[in-house]
Amino acid sequence: MPQEHLGLFDTPPTRRQVQFSLVIVGLLFAALLVILPVRDVPLRPIHAFIPMANAIMFLGELITATLLYAQTAVFRSRALAVVGTVYVFTALLLIPHALTFPGAFAPDGLLSAGINTTAWIAWCRRVSFPIAIFFYVQLRRAESTAPREAERPAAGIVIGVIAAIALAAGVTALTTIGQALLPPFFVTHSRVAYANSLQYESVVFVLSIIATILLFRTRRSVLDLWLLVVFAGWLTQSLLILSLHGRFTVGWYWLFLVSVFSHLVVMLALLAESHRLYLRLALSTSARNRERESRLMSIDAVAAAISHEIGQPLAAARAYATAGVSWLDRPQPDPERAVKSMRAAIDAAQRTADVIKSIRAMFAQQPGMASEVDLNDLARATASALGRELAGEKVSLQLTLDEALPPILADRVQIEQVLVNLITNAIESLGATRGRARRIAIRSAALNGHDVLLQVSDNGIGITDEAMSRIFEAFFTTKKTGMGMGLSLCRTIVEAHGGRLWAAPGEQHGVTFYLQLPRSDLHAA
Image (tube, rainbow, N blue to C red; front, side):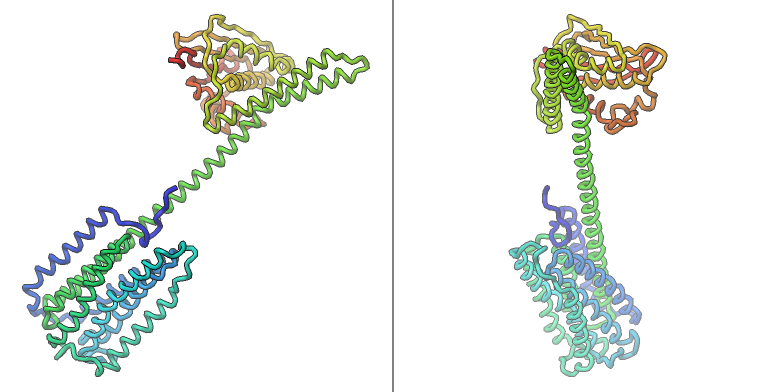
């Protein structure tokens, strides 16, 4: 079977996914072009805006990190663990960012924040992502030449989470307690120190460009595609930040709106893709289970068919051998009859071997040994072989055979199996018949100049209408001790020869089976 792609890490993107991502990137840059001319237009401060935007991004980034860590657990990939960890880190930084933002919860922010605290926290969020992507690309290259995933060491999810928490705590402490160590970002709560901001944000922009190029050149999966979309969002934000001179402007509000938009789109895309992949995996697993069950049923069918088909000739061989021993054990042995019984036992054993070979060839889907067969001769030979059973149940056999019947091209052993089954079923049906003579009639005739038809009729107890519609189904039987494979196997054999096998109620009693097979000259044609 072809290798299954089980996750975002190893599944190549489809054309539709690439097109969708390009549409998103195009919308981001188109919105940037629209906003740039009016970026410094002042708007009224909305102090609840930052907590709401951060809360949305916080949930989105934690969900994304969870998806990535789930993939990490499956693939045991340190590269994925790095990306998941940076998402946890950036999500955690949103908490002090909201708490320290001037006016959100306090006029100057909480946690003893200064005017630059929030800006430096946001800068650490932006710079951490391209740095993490550098490690992601390098680790993925190393893992591509490493042993199979099952042999890789654990990726250390717990260590990654602890590292993210520690780093977030360190950044928070540095930007609050150690804020005096950091150069200024803002002159006032709303006015940017533009020269400094241009330098700091240029570092983020250059790192993002390098990471984007590196990721684009090594892209190979759905995850890589959506990471590129994330970088497109970061780049549009960096370009706008490079031109902003203060907060609470059109460009400043757009900055956070596009950040929320890009985070939600990527999160929803990853959720949808994960759902699609695992749904496909579930369907694939279900199909494999059905295939396994089908194979098991096929094995059961082979076993049941072998048991069903060799039972009669083995029973006959045992009966003839027992009779031969009985003729020799008498006070006055009869060697002639004993030899006759032993030869009959040998013939029955040979029929058993032929049946086994025929069944094996049929289930292996290999062609049997086809030859021209006289269906009349085969019917007489089968009736003779079953003479003991007919006599034991006191059943009379009537043969009405068309002597001008053309030959058929068939596997003699397999067609003989069909006739044995049909006649044996008729004998068993007649075993429960009371109050009338037990009869089986076999008739043959040419049909429409193309086929030959053989009818096997009995005047037994018959079959109900409901059972009649199912008698050719595998494992369906009307007998207490039957396996339900005989008629199913017969129909399979007949159809493999290009013929038909069906049944209908008798004129007064019992059932008539119709065996229709093409003439040998039609096979040759």
